Amino acid sequence: MKKGNVVPIRIGVVDQRVWGIASSIDIYECDPGKIRDAGVIRRFVVELCDLIQMKRFGETRVVHFGEEERVAGYSMVQLIETSLISAHFANLTNTVYLDVFSCKAYDPETVRMFAQSYFGGERSVLHVTERV
Image 1 (cartoon, helix red, strand yellow):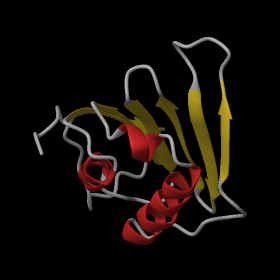
Image 2: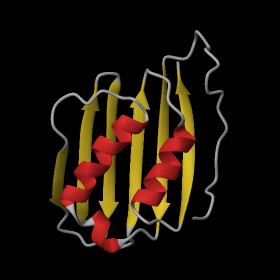
Image 3: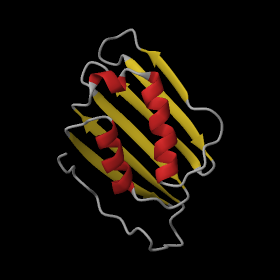
Image 4: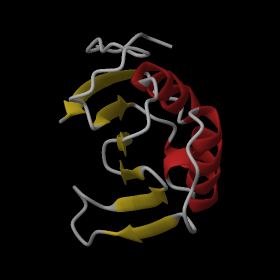
């Protein structure tokens, strides 16, 4: 697994101005079978939430859509008690676009490494924003 680009943040350092952490992870050259399987995507959400200790709120929504080939694929949304996790799985490019937003602290690099490994990605890029 190749290391992606990482924007460092201060995990464990409490900044009273920060309300939440938003991370966007683009994972390239994923396993086509995994990103086209709604069951695999649902299991990923459960395992990710367990890993970063986020409590899921309701069921994971996984919907396949996109009449245009460029955007066709599954999209996923999972509410968590501290906000949400969402993703789009692009069939044409075998790319995962994953977003995690939470007002509870978590390590975005842990999310990146887990998601890239889970979907068999060759490389990834991580962007992190502290929301104030």
